[in-house]
Image (cartoon, rainbow over all chains, first blue to last red):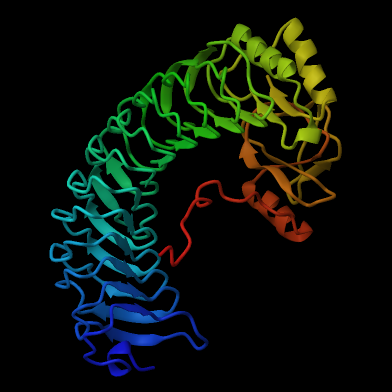
Length: 337
Length: 90
């Protein structure tokens, strides 16, 4: 099928192109160099195999070509000085992520589900950046190297880095006071989980399946937190207090080396708590069971799954056994040693 | 307490599991036989489990995967992509 360059040629009045979606889907190659005043180019969910002619157009604010069949490298973006949105997720792009230097207006960068390699470039020159999705690169070699410094990207709402081969530590996050969602699971990250203090907008934090060590940081004050996962690391110390996390629905910390529970209450919204394969003492196991009994959640409220079993954890004792029976009577699925 | 010994070919299936003991090499899962929703996906975890739902225990992951397929069970939705933005945000 013909590309756009054969449909609309050399029209300086065109400032926006949206291919839409059609059946059959638009295929072939697209060259948009003939539209010097183009500000927005959107061509999502087609079968385009190549898009060219946009890398030097400083008028472009929006470039979206997600879910096509585009191969090859992402071109240099250095000429797109007004670029705000660049979406090319779910294609077959290879090679490195180009430098983002000079992209001072960039707000949304979505590159996930490709075959990109190399390191994540610096993003500190894009202080308006809200969405950074580079997760789930599909090749045998994925994104490598460290997570760049994010401390100047105070507008960030979402950071998706999962399922790559990133190394080094998770950078400081406390400056990102708008952050809602941070995902870095399934990488090769080391060091400790950084402080999450002050991240009152944070809803999801996923860092499982890395090589993280040290304690789980305090979750005090994270009033928006809904899901927290840190399983399959090498974390030590206590499960932190979950008091005040009134919207928390899911907490997974299994397969670490955690020994205790800081105590306090849990919300009756918390319906999945997985802490198996740790080194929890019977005191910790009993305290967790007691907290869930006190919360009063039943299967009428939704999911009720509590796992404190597995290798390493102690069995409940005394009142802990009674509390386990109470939870089961309320419709919980409970595993202990 | 009940100790179940899985056979070689198909999982043991227990409705309203009560004090089911598994070891660290057995695979098990929990699902709602009415809605077919899988509540706990296949895993290996030793311990003693009670649940109002159905528990399937097998020697291998493949047996449980076959059980999921044979019974039309529905695995839980992936946590991780739920906030992906939609197209055409302009």
